[in-house]
Image (cartoon, rainbow, N blue to C red; front, top):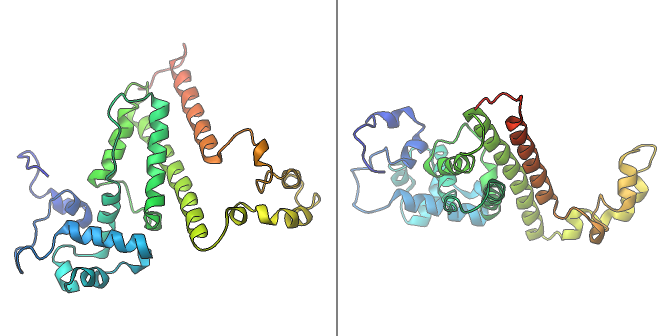
Length: 266
């Protein structure tokens, strides 16, 4: 982080420890052997462990052992595991952002959602960390800045823009975690037919009776519930279909705001 004389030198104390570390607002340790470790090494080692073995395998002892040091050495760089998790989240969000004006707003929103979803698939542990508050770290804030950029010409106020970013982020998170769970199931030995329910179509057609499930019954009998007749599917991928309906809703909202008689709150 470049030094700025307008930044309060005590600003780091007003942020959570991990956020302050991510901004470079915490001085590196002065004691101990020189160049023994770096914050980047520690975080990347933690990510490597989590990617291979899951979040439960990440501990200060495990990271220190992988680096050839003691856990106490790590605590001179990162004071808590919560700070480490925040830094891990921020590190894996350091992904390329398209150049400005590379696409229209709908295409930008598609890329935004798909890019976010991919983080959950590339790093399955990412969604296992509970949301603890608003994004505070640089790479997470870059994503928000990107979202605000492709909405800059929309007739929206800041509250509306941020609400749309939350809408897109929520869809990305839920869809990304669903695809992550499918990846995990397949890696554990399941098949696409088991995950979709196709292997259980015959059983469900007997169990889902019209008297007990009057509205689900015809859907199961048609084969749609277990994706039995995909060749007849007119909507394609469910996630893409859902995203397009969200974009349609945003488009409708934007058009309504520009219609005569509508007050412009931007």
